[in-house]
Amino acid sequence: MHVVGSVINSPDGPAAATVMQGRQAMFERSGKCLCGCGRETSLAIRTDKRRGNVKGEPQKYVRGHATRKERQKCTAEGCTREATATYCRKHSERMRLYGDLIGRRPKGAEEFRFWFRVDKSGDCWTWSAARGAGKFDYGYFWTDGKKLVKAHRYAYALANGPIPEGMVICHRCDNPPCVRPDHLFLGTQKDNIHDMDAKGRGRRPTRRTHCPKGHPYDEANTALRTDGAQACRTCRKLWHETSRARRVAETAEVACPRCGATSGRPCTSRFGAMADVHDARVSSAREAIR
Image (cartoon, rainbow, N blue to C red):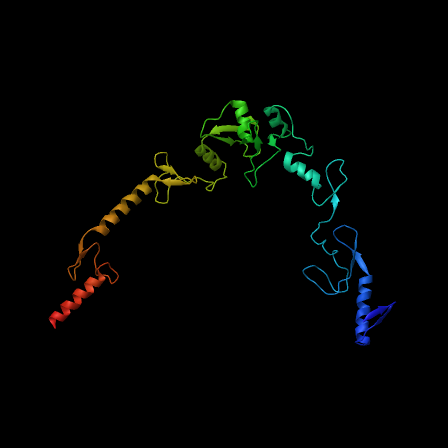
């Protein structure tokens, strides 16, 4: 088959020529690529549900543009670059590295660099630079000694002096990025868990007054597990005593009432430790009677 001018000659006959003419007409019409590049797309020659194309209608994207997002202007002030997200690539890197759109690491004393990254516009003083992921998004700060510390611990140390070893800094405002000194207090991890439970953020928001056996959860009878849950000391003591008595009973010498064999448990059960010995003695006794 070959094309001469606008006439299609096909060795397969007029039917094949008609098909080729239809395909040529389909490619002559086109639409706009949805990625925003402005390029024209040809009509789809077959239906493709995965790509969203319908036969005879303009394709959604130019080949290779399906992974692109619709272009928009960067939201940074004075920037005219195109962006696929809130910021263009340049300003996105600045936000990732420095926490702002200026793109310059502040120079000066360590304390000046720290407060330069703090937003004091609200009730909480929010750390605006590097932060962790998830709900525990505490701020992080590099000291002059090239040591990475948590921002709220550094803020507390600036206001109140060094933090004793083994102590934690808790938030009264329950806002991890907050570094306002009067929103922080010193305590142990146990104090931190109690504060979390009192504010209803723990695994057990409401504290029970009695255990399931009816023993009171008072100061002398309450133990805390590693996850902050309550444990009854009386129930724990009874469990240990019962377990100890069970082990003593299992290891005591018991005589079988049927065959007289002694072991750590009666052999009257078919599944006991002396079941085989019991069966052998009963069999021999029966044979002796015969």
